[in-house]
Image 1: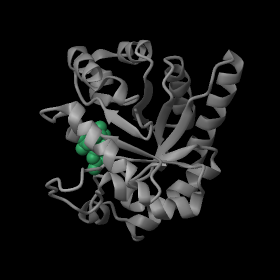
Image 2: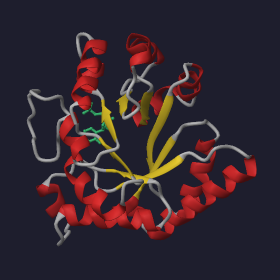
Image 3: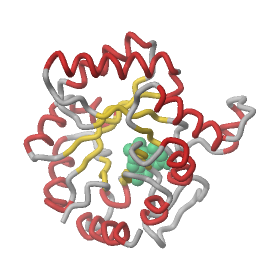
Length: 237
Ligand code: C5P
């Protein structure tokens, strides 16, 4: 049976590949992430198609602009019917608060279910060298937790963060706050950069509510087998 905590990233640029993998994974996967590569290639049709397949969708477009523009952009995206939308916490408190409020008002006006709105804290690809290059004085982990708390205070439903930061975020923001973690590799997988990456079981034990997994499933020789193995690993958390 599908585990809704698993979100498979559809990092493709055409609908044929999307349909192939979604059909291969069948009822074992219910949640998919549509990111920039796919959305910019095929447009909104992919969200509509996934909905016809009764799938949940995390539309990962990471909006980052002035408050009015982000809020307007989110209201446009809301009409597509994705379950989760996201913005960059680096846009600041006012941007996040405006976005959350406008989305709520617009959903009420249209009498539709408001999608969850989450914030990207610090991109999980940022390593210590990148961090120093950006000129930050604080520790990256401290900043991630600060941004998560800021997102919560602004009325957001959760964050995207590294699995290794999930524990601190959970402690700071509570059990109801979504913690969606990419950078997951199955136990035993070869990993080049260990710094902000975890296995499915570690991430869940640390407090992640959802795992975003792409290549370990979509680039596997047998994607369904790879997904089932990961779902088994998730059970052990
Ligand atoms: O690496 P993988 O193929 O599992 O990536 C799946 C998704 O997770 C990608 O779409 C990417 O946006 C995100 N990701 C991330 N940080 C990482 C690795 C992946 O945000 N360190």
